[in-house]
Image (cartoon, rainbow, N blue to C red; front, side):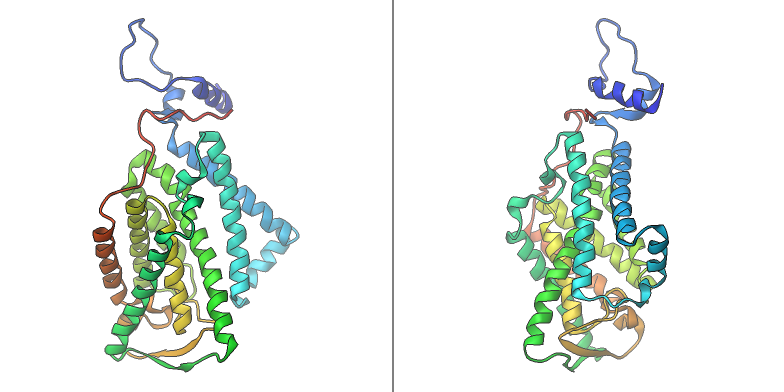
Length: 335
């Protein structure tokens, strides 16, 4: 039996039951057990389809934009020489987010599910969860830098911009980091988290995705081991937001405001040096305290700040609102 034929058979089959049929029906075939679970097509196969869709869409766009494979390879060679501006960050992440949404919409058609079930209900956009997350993110980075200041490890040395340039920087980076938050949160904690959780449970999926989130940041210039660990904890905190609020908007707000705050204060963001920031700043002291060139994310104070935010979140959002697939859901079809 071919792969496609097996899928077709799986789609037309009812959900697998653990009860013995009175008519003595034959046990499910080996291939059906591989492809079909209590929720229809198994989570692993759905994830594979989604990843293939994203790779094809994103890869196709990059090849077209760079004029083919050779142009793409040449662009990669000079990627480290490019200055990351708000416009560049907005453009690249907006396109990536759009392609992720297209892939999720296709999967929604396949699974007969609404796009909102993957964590981004549009009716709640710009709602209170987003602003609570944004306030929490800004207070987290500001509080970390305040403690560093009191320990004589950080200081603001003056304004980097003046006049209307301050407003332009604040708005431009705010929009750019909002798109970054949308893109990275939907990539790491949107469709993939939803589907993986249906197969192995929410928190095992959260730990796996947070580990991949940290691994991805390990390739950033000037990143450190402490910074990578802190990024993993950052991911777990955002998963807690998702678990308690039932959507990604709080996580998007926190992610965007935390990154925006680093740029506002003129400190490195995961090893990325600040550009067009409002303030000039300087660190002094050991790297384990200040984070060094990697920025405050690599400071030992950051996990403490994240833990405090997690405790406050658990007190404010007491109930788990996140809904995942449960046994007995409608089976997935590919028709």
